[in-house]
Each structure stands twice: as structure tokens, then as C-alpha cells.
Image (cartoon, rainbow, N blue to C red; front, side, top):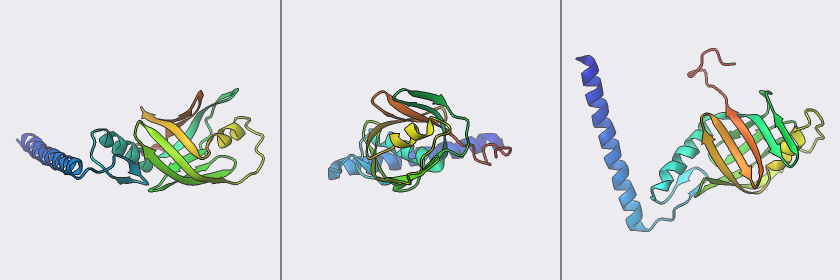
Length: 175
């Protein structure tokens, strides 16, 4: 009986939430809002924005670790846990050998624009894939995808793939 009550209450809460989202979307369409997402703020109300909002939430709640590099002629796998990418409300930071950071804007069509990217500039010879990976992240527009725990940044034929770091809540044995 308790299980049935739980699922009944859950269904009611979800239906209420769906109704509110639908009403908000209708109001946004009536107001003629632009359909873009900038610096973590949702504007507009097109159906694709729900996907952008999910993408934004996934970007910001995870720490991403470099898993693969495919830049120019460099193709490599990385199991180093210290090469990371982190997204905050309106900025990102990356830690490879050097530290890189700047602003970002999500755009329709699963794109991200990096802006005002700055980086320290030490020479990093080992592992060999680090310099191409660091030089890949510059001002510009990239395709972005999160699938099955992997974040892919791609531009043309080049890409960086990051795996998500487990949180202690997801995996108590995670380091």
C-alpha cells in the first residue's frame, strides 16, 4: 500500500511540473523571446531549449577528465585523472599541463562558443598529446555532445573526449 501511495504522489508531482513547464513555454512563445542560452540563463521557450537546459545542467554538475585526443595527427588515449575540464555558471576552466579558462555560451544545435580564452604557456613535452589538446581549446564555436558519461568537443575533424568523474554519491569508492 505504501508503494502504491508513493507512486501516486510521484505521478501527481510530475504532472504538475509538466503543466507548469508547458505554461512557461507558451508564455515565452507569446512574448517572442529569443531562443538562445547564454552563461547559464535560459531565454526563449522553443522545445529544443529543454535539451540545451539539460546539456547545461550536465556540463555544470560534473568534472570532466580527458579520455581521448584526436587533433591533427595526434591520436591518443589518456588515463591521467588530473587533466580536467570544469564548467561553471558562465565560465570554464581546464587543467592539463597548463591552465586554460574563459567564458562560454551554449548555442542552438548542440554548439558551445568559447570566448576570451586565456592560458598559461609552459612547454609540456610529456605526454606528447598534451600540447595538441591544450591548443585545441581556443576562442570559437565547437560541437558539443554528452552521451553515456562522455563529453565530446569537436571542431571539424578534430576532437577531445572527456569522461565524467564519479561523485561520492554515485560511487562511494570513487577517488
